[in-house]
Length: 455
Image 1 (cartoon, rainbow, N blue to C red):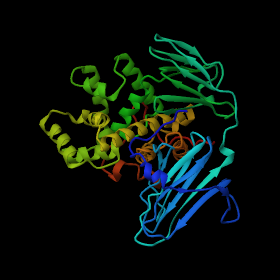
Image 2: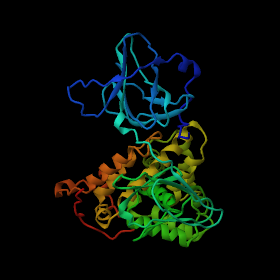
Image 3: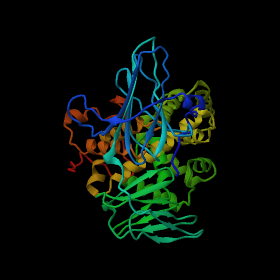
Image 4: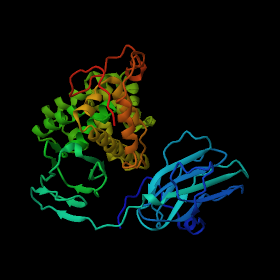
């Protein structure tokens, strides 16, 4: 049994696990008379005790989808779900609900004990409570175990014969071939793995690791440089790559035999003129200049806000601003260097920054993967579309669940596919500065309003 834990949160102390309130599920009872949420079971708890313990234990079922609610008279800090050993599994996103926090779409990775920390903040003996709600219909039907297909230490050309395969290609440059067309499947990146599933949902997905290339009947998808290219787009433009830009810069990185990580690419900036020119093409573009402007401190502040979703601490601000002012760091290379620095930082804040960058890059990759037809790719070609995807990535947190975030990705695609009126387009400038340069979508020719999509 393997599953991902979140190291950003401290482990749940054993004493809190022993003293946790034990919850028992019963049948879900809709408050409005209709079960629009689709829940089947519920476990709820309320108290008016002063400084009540906000830790609960409950028994989950593998594969079941759970939603959580926590409320207190002061906004709860957040909800955290722990496994039976006290390792953090999920945390709630920022919510707009007054005096409440919610965490949706948690899928239990095993059957057994879990813990919920409710994050209550009470001003006294005031009412606080929690609710856990489960959907039995979300439990996958039992089936045949996935087939394991392993590569060698060399270059492998593997063929996917059916879905529900775990393909570990190993070292070397490895490809996996599928008989169908690219648009027939969904691709979803999460960490080191890539999931390939049918859009019909009738077949269990393949899980790919160590694969550099996926071949379909109508096109080939490069995986080797996907993460690095998306990292460049996130760091310099705050958005996912457009379909044409992704292919263009993947090709350029491959021709330069570039390294595949942000840290290695940033290190080559001062020693490889071709790499320097490629990075400069991002940093000196009109789109990047529109996002990052002002004096050195304002410039660094904007990069932190865009890449890490936070303001810099004074030490970090001084370090990067002084590096730019002294000439040790060019503005063109600053964004990539700050992202690389975040990935090397092992402090608590550094681990949080590393997690948010990883999540942003995965979600950016998944957005571009959704542009799997010419019609879908075409709608992501305007300033307003870029702003929508920039807002999508700005909502990512260090504890975002990447697979569950796909619903937000899909909503963003629907939003940019809806035609906008001329007054709506009047605000299509970054940071609402009417005199800023127009955004240029790198890798695509200039385009006007794109056609609408119908799903």
